Image (cartoon, rainbow, N blue to C red):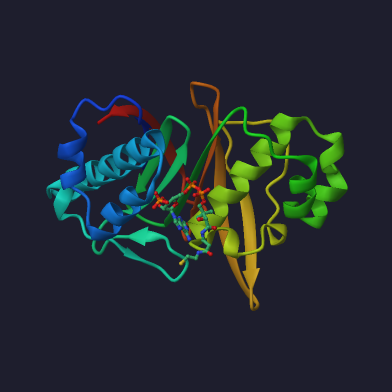
Amino acid sequence: MSTIEIFLVALDEPALSCETLAEWLDAEERARLASFERARPRRRYLAAHAALRLILGRILGRRPAEIEFRRNAWGRPETSGGPSFNMSHGGARALVAVADKGSIGVDIECGDKNVSAEVFDAVASDAELLASPGRRLERADRLWLWVRKEAVLKAFGRGLSFSPRALTVGAHAPDAGFWRKATLVEQDVVRDFSFIDLALPFRSVGALAIGGCAGEPWKVDIRPLTI
Ligand SMILES: CC(C)(COP(=O)(O)OP(=O)(O)OC[C@H]1O[C@@H](n2cnc3c(N)ncnc32)[C@H](O)[C@@H]1OP(=O)(O)O)[C@@H](O)C(=O)NCCC(=O)NCCS
């Protein structure tokens, strides 16, 4: 059975100094870092990107600063010769998911994020609307639908540039022990994804998705990381 490793990164109190972490970033990351007006989001961005570099560096046997990223046409960071990875930020925490094959996507949100009934109705597929219009759902169910959609669309590499309404993931109660299937169709090409709800601490809500490995059994290993 293949393993997908997920690192739950604490962003607010890094053990290493911000100066050290900033030295690991490339020019694009430094420019983005400098664009934050407020200190807390700036620190969190720095810690998340440093953690991503540390994790990939350990796998690739390189120093964090030596990791080189390119982006696909929709902005997804990738690294040549490296594992499939994806990152998500949710308040004081980030998730970094890594797999040795497939195309991976992950999403984390703070449990108090409000996906309104209007937003639900705008992103839900016809099947999801039929099963449960947003107005009739609990707030938590709408949030689960949201993180599942983002995880699958990030595994696809398109993010929200691909219509979330074209994807059915369901707004059912979470079940972290059970992989589900989702399909995306683009220009008659059918792509299969598997996704799973994540059992996360700190009232965080998250989901993981993988594409390109139909039927593969996956073990999900979640571990904390302080940078
Ligand atoms: C991907 C997306 C859903 C992320 O939204 P978000 O609310 O910032 O969510 P998250 O915190 O979960 O994810 C952010 C991370 O996802 C990764 N990411 C960025 N674009 C991605 C994509 N297309 N697919 C998968 N992952 C992506 C990055 O690591 C990013 O981290 P960073 O912003 O610190 O660099 C959103 O940015 C999106 O839809 N982007 C693509 C659409 C688009 O129009 N892109 C044009 C730019 S080229």
